[in-house]
Length: 51
Image 1 (spheres, rainbow, N blue to C red):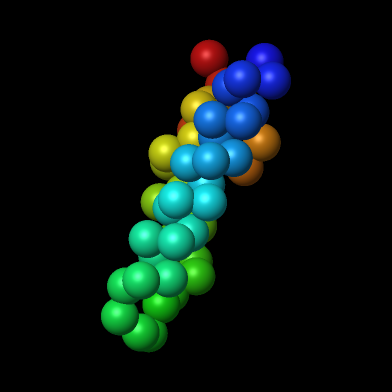
Image 2: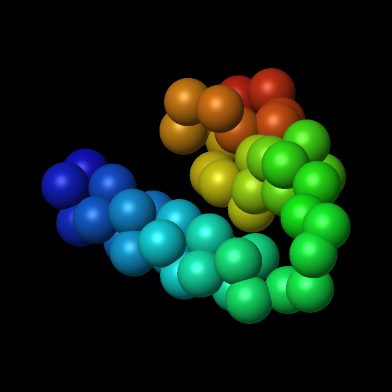
């Protein structure tokens, strides 16, 4: 489990960095919606029901 959480943490940092490099204006709600879709279903804040 620790490895999976570490991978999600590294991916989250990469996603935030990519978002910050996009031109302004940056829409936080749009980022969070996409971010929630990228997370595994079992992870808190995931935008899908757990299977």
